[in-house]
Image (cartoon, rainbow, N blue to C red; front, side):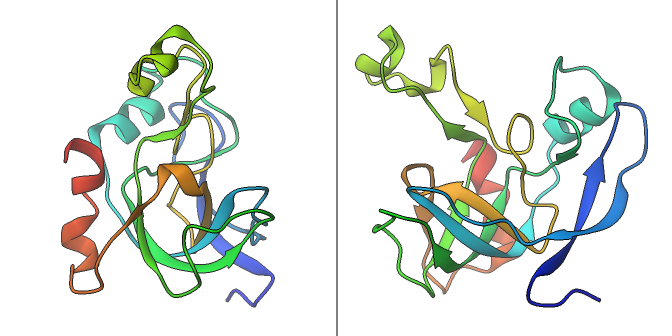
Amino acid sequence: MSDSTTMRAMVLHAPGEPLQLEHLPVPRPGPHEVLIKVKACGVCRTDLHIIDGDLPSPKLPLILGHEIVGEVVGTGVDATKFPNGTQVGVPWLAHTDGDCLYCRNEQENLCEHALFTGYTVDGGYAEYSVAHEDYCFALPHEYATAQAAPLLCAG
């Protein structure tokens, strides 16, 4: 069982290996980040590509999952967009540099230095996750979490 300082997470240590259940420290939100208690996280074909080794250079060890729905339970320094209790969704795009040609032309999805949830930063196959507030979406509590999670990928 987890306590208030640890969480359960499914961790990939190497492509081709099964995910391992581990007890890890609850992540701490950095500047402009929110701490999210994960309610649901969808399984995307991209997650399976990462596990199978089809996508190069994932962060390892890695907590996969980029279709996260959860509740904000903490904020880092200068994080002001989502108060505790806000239901948010976290998509594939985790961060962009804001400075490259694509970012300057509002084409952040093409950023040359982008970070990706569940690939280059830890994702939502865990009890808690952190995400940059600029890459989270407020979701009405009326949305069922399991039904909303897949929308954060293709939606």
